[in-house]
Image 1 (cartoon, rainbow, N blue to C red):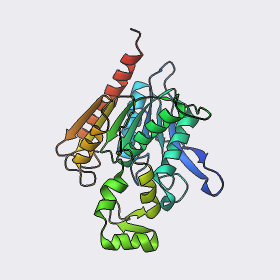
Image 2 (spheres, rainbow, N blue to C red):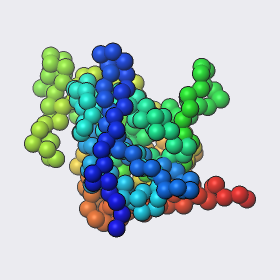
Image 3 (tube, rainbow, N blue to C red):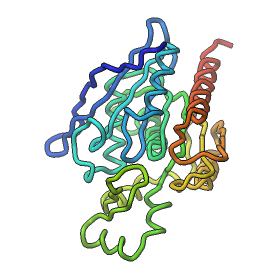
Length: 284
């Protein structure tokens, strides 16, 4: 039986300065001594946190295999500080990048769910940009990206899925109040989408050109997903022409993909990326 860290106390990292400072909660499982495999990094979806079913199961896999695992709550989520209404893709990306650099693994596999898939793709761009030869300025240390597993990924969801479907009353609310509310099927509290989130989303688009992750990508997508249509996953694949991409459709899968059968597919996909990483490290 693996240790799922039931009594683990979260660590906190201050991200940002002055009024923008917020305390970001993270749970870090260290790798078993001598295990040099990549660390698993969990990136949650919108209004989700690091204690969800998929996140805990991923940590359990890390325990079973002796891997490091990093989980975090974005500001305004879970145990982290900060206001949810201040959240943007740029802000949550900054937090994820800060946590990864703080823990400082040498190699990582990013596992992103829904909005976490968008964050993962932006992380890949930032790690390449800030550590690559074309980056002008002081080099910021970061891990090597060994692979991604994206679960019902929602890149550019603000401009691709929300903005085109805004009703007149929602546009009015955005203009007058700076946000609009939408009933959530997962919580009694409504989803809140701010003008700042939508405007910032346009600055973080990834589906406007070729995405070069430089690593294998495995996408899991439910075909009965009411939040992110499976056509969105197919569009993402078109923007990953240079990568080794596997797209797995789950015919009766919803957006959460948290059933035991879905979890089994997730863990299998992660193990596949680990095997791929290991084979690339073997001397020829």
